[in-house]
Length: 324
Ligand code: UDP
Image (cartoon, rainbow, N blue to C red; front, side, top):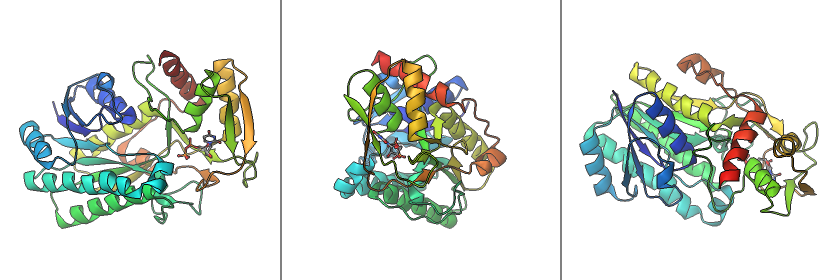
């Protein structure tokens, strides 16, 4: 029975990873300051309520738990907020990750999975994006993750006994099939969540940010991945490290995308609500298309997604949204 330490296990993606690990028989321990996470989202294992800035608590917790592997989810994730308050992002997403790494170094712990993001690529030249594409983040959020990837890469080069996997997430969406857990933010900005909240009547209309992009219908294309498939990628990445795989970086997406208009059509169909949509100008920093080449993840770890279906993604998100 392997022990897995999870920072941010009370958050949206983290809680789905805790669930999948728990279902596979792992012993999990969540470390979360509950700033955006929720205690009731943790379906397996215990919670240590703590901040990554509290190095003493982190050290004591890890010394006691002695994990075989770790997943580092805890981070801030809003692009617009990162532009307005970059230091908050560099503190939590970069400096706090450094705290974690220093404690891992002290305690000789290895096998870390890091939550990274497609935002590290900025505006990619080639679609689908491969892991070798240049890292050129266009906002502090992407930069804060890219810097942490660099910490990991340099640290693993210096320490032959430390291995990690960075998973670069594309557009994560959907919820638990039984609607026990899902996305729960105060100020949701993501397309699928905004569309469903509009269908629920929380917003008067859904704005489409840009209709003049060089795409077939003029709206942006994204690779939407179901959160349970993403959670499973973390388990596969841990197994890969446990079997002796070297440090690696993998894209996490399905390898094909949908336009904003296509997502709206599916959201209207799933909810049976013909909610209002307003075409508006482009949102700053949105690349026209972002689609993952995830062949490396599939080939190297054996990851096999189960929910590559936009309607399923939107339906599970809708069932969750209705419960909120
Ligand atoms: N989008 C939109 N209206 C919204 C929210 C998002 O048109 O209310 C668009 C956004 O401009 C982007 C796509 O939907 O082209 C996905 O945006 P989201 O914020 O969900 O994820 P991102 O790709 O920015 O991580």
